[in-house]
Length: 62
Image (cartoon, rainbow, N blue to C red):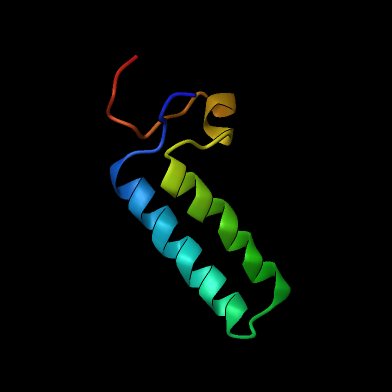
């Protein structure tokens, strides 16, 4: 598994993920638990959708 999420993309994923999960924990709608996905991809640094689209935000070259 190669890194394909980098820099600002990674930070935004973590912030948005934490915000959504926090909202869900505070009594928000059930769909707010979708925040687990961007949180996990931001922490791990890999998004499984990016290779399918041929996309990467990571500055590391192949």
